[in-house]
Length: 187
Image (cartoon, rainbow, N blue to C red; front, side, top):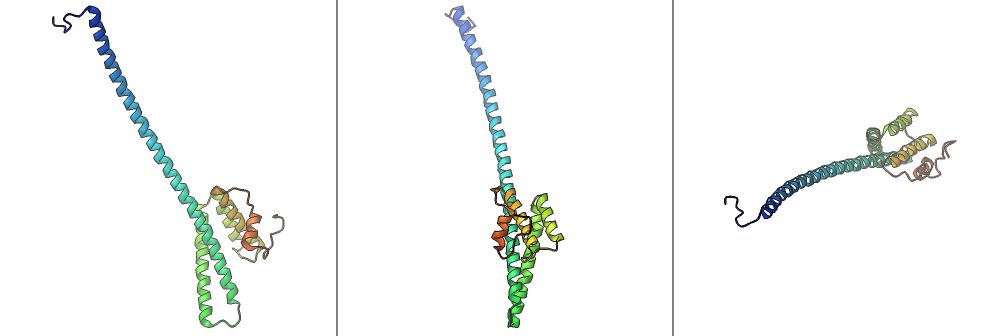
């Protein structure tokens, strides 16, 4: 008997054929399952990579804005401090030159920070910075100027996820205390 089923009944041979068919189907099913599982793993990995890149880009963007804010404030403070110190009587020529250099460096830091705020911030930040410059730039003695910068900083806080209700008026007070009053109608 060439059918390889010597001594087996027809039912046994049918069961054997059925098992082989079932094994073939299971093998094909296993192959498809493995392909789907592999494809799913690749898709999940690609999505994770994409999300990680997006998060890293967002962190970089936030850091650029925060650095620009810090540099802006540092530049303004150093400029103001050197300006006040230059008004002092009895400065030596060497001290005067050092203060003027400090003032120039601080102005450069402020200009760089303004540009970065406009570049990395959203449209509102760019508009607020332009509005500040249109009024003649920043002056620590001008209530509107300080408040305008406080509005920029408050908007940046919101943009980077720190929208916790801290108002521009609060930031104004933090920036200059009671030395410079709030502009009328801003409370």
